[in-house]
Every structure is written in C-alpha cells, then in structure tokens.
Length: 234
Ligand SMILES: *Cc1c(COP(=O)(O)O)cnc(C)c1O
Image (cartoon, rainbow, N blue to C red; front, side, top):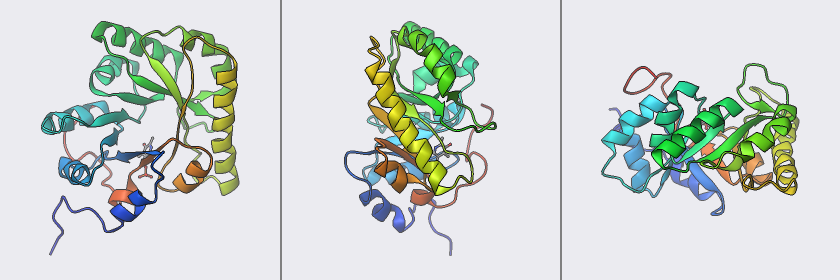
C-alpha cells in the first residue's frame, strides 16, 4: 500500500509547532506536487517557497482557488526572468546582483508592484554559490538604495555545503551583524528587518541567531524528488 500523494509526514505538525510564532515559516515545495501544497495549506501554511519561476507559475495556476498564499522565490533568478518573477512572487529572497535588482525594479515599476526582496549575501567564501560578497555589497548599497520600486528589507544567506556548526554560526551571526551595519548607515529606503537564514539542516541555529524567516522543505515534507513534479523548462 502506498500513501496518498497528499499525505504529509507525521513530523509535519511537530516541526511546525517548534517554530516560534515570530518566525515566518516558508514551506519549500519545489519539485513537490500541488497536492502537497494543498495539504499544507489545509494545515494552515500560507507562505510557500519555490526555486524555479516556471514551476511556480504552473502550480499557481492550479491553486488559483487559494487566494491568500504568499509566494516566495528562493532560487537563483536569471535576469531575463525578472519580469515573470515580479508578476508571480510576493517575495524574492535571491537578489544576488545589482544588475538583477535593477531589472526587478524596472519590472516592478512597469507592473505597478512592489516585491519584498532579500539581498542574498555570502558571508564566507563559497565559490559554487550565488550571492553578493560583503565588500561588493558595501560598494553597491547606495545603488540598491535608489531602487524605488523594490522593498529591499531582508538578507538571505546559505552556509556552504557541509559547513561545520562553527562556520554556520559565523555565517548567521555575520548576517545579523551586517543587517545592523546597513541599518546604521542611514539609507533612505534600505532598511533590513528580515533575516532569511535557516533550512532543514540548520534552522534551530538560524532561529537562535535571529532568523525571522526559515525556508524548510525536507524536514516538513520528507525527501523530495530530484526534478520537478510538473512543468518543464525554466
Ligand atoms: C531547497 C531550498 C531550501 C529547502 O531545503 P531543505 O533542506 O529541504 O529544507 C531552502 N532554501 C533554498 C534556497 C533552497 O533552494
């Protein structure tokens, strides 16, 4: 006998209840079918994270009867999909270059939307990962501050694959400190009050370091397939 596709693992509620109410739980449903999103929605989840624009658009069409979902884009975004991302997401956690931010700002102006954005930063060297390193970010902050159609209010970071607990701690506390530095610089628009820090393997540590958003997939839903459940191309 196989479980119905919409069944959520037993640990779902336990994990959820362990997240403080002040922390936004973004349920990461990339590669998972819409039935899983419906099941999580039925348990009260309203924030969903997807890593690919096209996969999310397909799912959103299917879920159009659920009007109060907040959609979060958490995966790397190519500049040529900036417009679609602005159209289809409330939050973009993966703003990893000034060029991308400028494209998003332009699209937001044209579409009359104001997406909430996190700057994806690299606090320790991590060549395979997307993200803006701290020196580069420092130099570009005045330009990010000019982007009137984005609400840049968060930092997002992902520790390197296989990082030690000490490195994870360094990354998370580094993000928190960087937010403080940005806020003290007195920009016009830029004000960081969101830290999107934890994933399944490290979210308790992230919460201890001041995360306001955690992005959880595996720990809520079990292991996911290695490719999208539907749709193709991205
Ligand atoms: C897939 C993904 C997650 C969720 O990962 P889990 O380890 O399954 O919790 C969180 N953040 C980003 C950016 C992701 O791509």
